[in-house]
Image 1: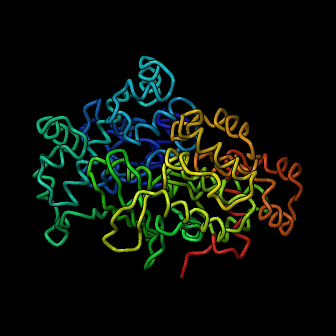
Image 2: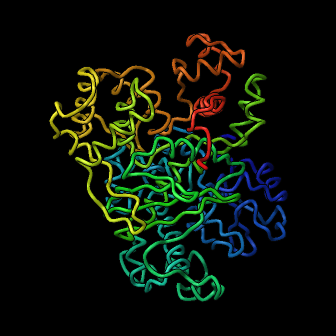
Image 3: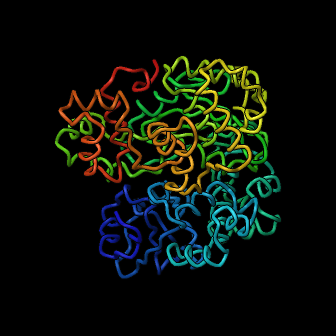
Length: 493
């Protein structure tokens, strides 16, 4: 699928008429006669083609005066896969808006993080998405408000504040305008048996595009879990979150048609950011059909894809944390890397309370790690230098890893650090920065899998063969890794 799919009218009409859920989040259908906008898979009878118009974002629909459909709830469809697939200014801006930067720092803060003027960002977002950064952030606030209204018993005033609204009046007006119902009417529509849960943990469903294979996704997170920060318990992956206003604990469990998510937050204003980071970690906005179709064109990869389609790339909720852990994992086993990380967590992480008792700390910040005594690190001197250089440069901002990172620029910065070779840089690009085309031709597991399948096994020859897999080579890595019996490839029992 290409950028600007909403401009391909014939294709959009076909998707709506066939109620194709694969296109949810790619575009939105606005109905001229009812002034309502829907996702392509809306269960109601499709409108006549002449009454349909198409927009690239929910925010653009709202800007044009359309209200969200009460049946298909288009505001809760999976996000567009484009923002994970692309590295241009619009994609980087969208990743930051999802991470709550506009709500916290305004459009000037967004522009500063991206290194462009506010006018350039406004112009590019308007041209591609039909809405500027303020309207996009407003649409996200409305979605957060709806979630809190429907899943908690919080008073409306607290919900308005937690969702990022500056006043109760703005909150009321926005909810009424977007959903054609007042906040209290939204809550009153809930079935009594599904009444909102008590304050504390928020329970919600994270949607995704099918298929989703949870084996390597949750298997990887569980097998590499750092004690105190992460755990696998009763069929769910749990981890602590360091968030802009406080901290939280996320509990995530795979279900057939969604990810069950429970969030415990010290500050409810962090809700949209926590959701965004969990979605990003689990790669839930990917388009598995497009990815798998591309990989199937290689006859040696096709059987792996057909056997277990829908593999995602296990990512992270904290880019700097992942980079530190990648260095700790250089040339050692998964168990040894967990031990190294666990020692750092116990000594330098911030302690937290977990109502369920399994988690104890937030992963240490780069600033805390930059202040430690290098002699206390139980690792070879060369890796110690790699570690201390990385955390110092992360702490002082020389190297910045975030959702807005420019992939080629960040790769070059990391490659310039001592002890950073292509494998370390690419695993950070794949799992922390989210580059869907990151590739690991020197990885031992990849080379072994390639040899077994009859693919070229030398890095240069395998890279040449993998050119046909672009831009989805990070997903090819998941399929190749999955040929091994390592615990990362299996859901824990």
